[in-house]
Amino acid sequence: MPFHAIDADGQPAGEADFVIAQLDAKRFRLVEPFRYVGPPGAWTVESADLPDTDLTSVPRFLRWFIGVTGQHMPAALLHDHLVGNGTHESPPVSRAAADDVFLHVLGELRVPQLRRLIMWAAVVLATKLGKPRGADFVGVVVWALAGLVGTIALVVSLAAGELGWAVVAAIAPVPFAALWGRCWRAGIVAGFGVLIVALPSIAILVGFIIYAVLEWLLRQLQALRPSVERSEVPQPTRYREL
Image (cartoon, rainbow, N blue to C red):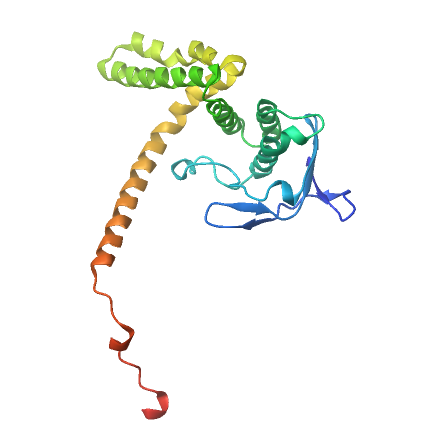
């Protein structure tokens, strides 16, 4: 494995144990340091480097496909470190380079190929959306709108039996991936990955919405119940008085 534990002298000491502490429902911090050594580079991640992380940033309705923890978590922790502290490394690591390291390390961890490609496309998309004033942001927004139109066109053409238009809509993610710039490969993966992940995720999202509404209704009903003063509650009979 490319991840190693660090002893008290800062030297590699066998395979890393990824020890984290939970801060609240969504936030964690790294407890034990670890070191990564592989073809992309070598980096040591100290506890102070990750005082607050969400491990793998995945919406709840997508966790059927990618969990917060799992086989990929070491790569996610390293990616978090490089994104947050990469400019302080020697040599510095850019956000785009951190995304490429993430893909490579997922392969070293033997994450299934399609899954790791979709995860990589997701972090590249997050990088581009993090630059709201740049051409990358505009490009992926146009790509997303085109993808929405293309998905609707694919469904409508299949329902109408228009196979020619269905084929055009199905291959549209390839040319539109050019809007991702140098990361066009991630654009292709994202274009087709949406079709793989979207339908099950939509069903799960609907279920979460229904659940959230029911929880809200129960809270409202609970608020309508009259409060009971402590003095109104009868005291239990002591055992000796029975």
